[in-house]
Length: 278
Image 1 (tube, rainbow, N blue to C red):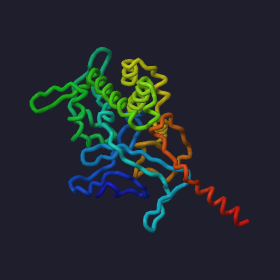
Image 2 (cartoon, one colour):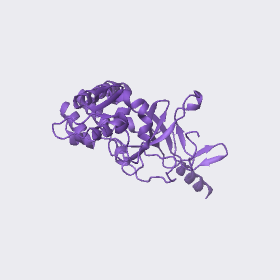
Image 3 (cartoon, one colour):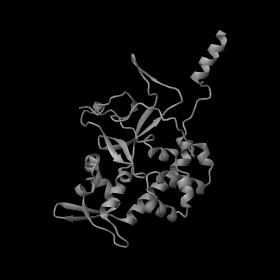
Image 4 (spheres, helix red, strand yellow):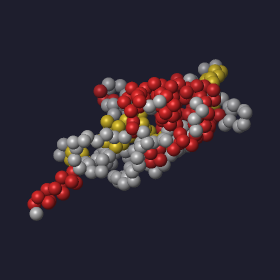
């Protein structure tokens, strides 16, 4: 069965098409969002894990051939580092207490999460991905993993530095910001995928940033995760065709959707037509 079959309602999704290669079949996976712990939907295609985002204007529908799709939202699938998604379950699996570093566990044990069979579909990428943040023991042909705090913090710091270098190249306003503000934005972006304890706390401490300010600066989409209406919350099988009327304003420009200056609201166009007819 193709990965889009079983969807009761039509959606417009921009994502890689596995049919072009003919080697793999993509699938939607229900996983925990790494920050909120709420169920979120991801797309797994050809060994690449992708998170789902959506954007919708106030008024809009899609014309698909002879069919009108009432849901005018545009869904996109973008790659996400699987370490972010797997980090919380590896943290739980080691059962760390105090200064004790916790237990080594087999990969099959770690990714077996009751109610979330989707994690087991990530076994093909979990081993290679998590070695960068885990200690590894091999007994015979069996491998055992345990999260390493220092390795995790080093990996998170690397992600922050990558973002810090990339952000000024994306927008002139970013290029004009001072180094501290850019660092703050980079930590806030990475923080969208981290629980406050322990990782966001440790990351802010390392860069000497105020945790509360970093938490307040995160995108409004993180808040939307909790009510199932934000990025990665789209469930193609279970979601009903409702439009979330609640909206928030993003605090950084990278998440704001630009509106063309010459574009007009369709509601205003009908209003003008009605006035002319009087």
